[in-house]
Picture 1: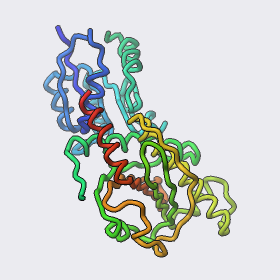
Picture 2 (picture 1 turned 180 degrees about the vertical axis):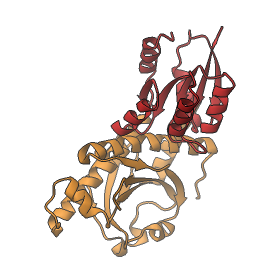
Picture 3 (picture 1 turned 135 degrees about the horizontal axis):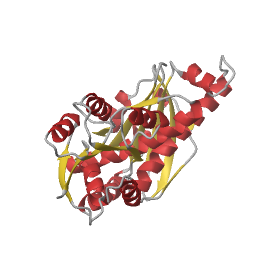
Length: 121
Length: 192
């Protein structure tokens, strides 16, 4: 069974960067979300066992997505991919239940390493 | 000739700037040990006259730096007058600031922010560009004709420092030829 994975980012370029960085052998079914609301909808629809989450997005930002997931005890594995790389941002997303905090521009080998650490590949 | 950007080019530029400013904010945040809020970058095409109108001399100090290499242009850094003392204090400058230390502080801030921003931007596009040291300048004394560009692309980002009145904007102005180089690289990035 392919793993349901969602990429949530308002930037087309960033979604594409993540898509290209995903290991080719990883068996997934991929959904893309352009804002926080769509990301939550994807989680609710069971399309985001793994969620790659940007922080600055319109409608609902990544921090709010994390807060809502926490409130609803969602089981998604959230990997934040952020342009805001200040230690404060990292601390905050980790306190909100994110599994990892990766910096943009995303490096494919870092992503692979994180997926392997989390036992996803 | 008025330049126009496709939606995809605009999206890509905005995202590249977003990443670059994240690096710049981090550089400053480390130095002053405070959290910086980032806005979504603005991408504008303006004429020099429109550009002059955008600048608010009452509100900001201005520094300029030129950059040379595969892309050429100018970086202007706008630093809020209101927060200068607060930042100075965070950086251990003697308060109240005298003229010399104020200028030193402003140039240091501009160099950190604009340097990280431009480097972040250029490295993502694999373009080489070298930034000169910043100098202060008086917007009111500068004539629109003295800019080396006419209609061009402005990449504008804003930084706000939490709990202080300080904010800063970085405006990257590209020369005509460099805009073409930049768009070529962007298209390559979008095609891959």
